[in-house]
Every structure is written in C-alpha cells, then in structure tokens.
Image 1 (cartoon, rainbow, N blue to C red):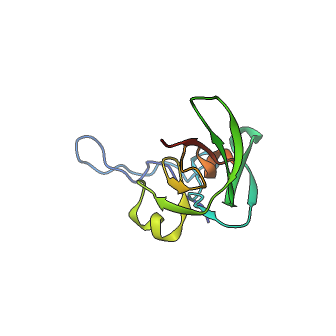
Image 2 (spheres, one colour; image 1 turned 180 degrees about the vertical axis):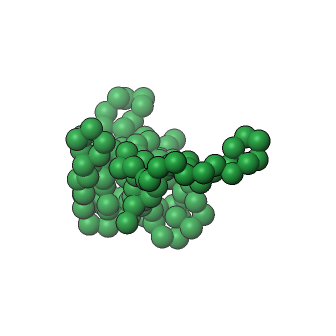
Image 3 (cartoon, rainbow, N blue to C red; image 1 turned 60 degrees about the horizontal axis):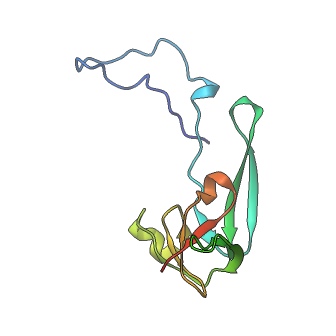
Length: 126
C-alpha cells in the first residue's frame, strides 16, 4: 500500500465540495517516510518517477563526518542519537534525520537526508 497525493477529495476555495471526475493515477502515489535507524548498515533501492532510482538508507552505524575548519572528511562510528528536533519520539527510537545530533567520538550534526539520499553525512559540532 502506498500514500496518495491527489487532491480530488479536497474542498474548493469557496468551501464547496469537489467531485471526483476520474480515478486515482499512478503519478499521484507517494511513499511512506524512511525512518533511518541506528544499527547494522542496510540500504533499499526504489524505482521512482521517470524510471530513476532512489537509494534509501534503512539503518547505519557510521557517518561521513566533515570538519568545516580543515575541510577534511572521515568515516566515524555513531555511538548514539542524542537529539532529533524533527520529532521528540525519534530521540528515544534512535531515528536519524537531517538535523539530528548524534554522539560520535567528536560530536556531530546530520546534514544529509539519509532516507532520501542513501548516505549519512554530518558536520562537526564545536
């Protein structure tokens, strides 16, 4: 089952009801959000609109950590998810999204969208 992003059931700006003039279409389908978890690295490849592929990161233990001062990037282990401003519940569950603050030997903030990009990039916190 997938998410439907059509607007046939929405109301008109005047408040009146819209009547469905056709059935649902394939291009109106969406997908459920990929909640990247902290754990053994797993990826999923989806075929998306236009025959393109979207790599989704289902879980990861490591992050590409960049130091903005030196410009160097290294692959670092994630110890745990400290804070996730996207959703309070994500802190407890250890979900990685953009903006999540993770504990590494150095401390980092996620800058990529792991569920969309298929990679976990982070920047060093000072």
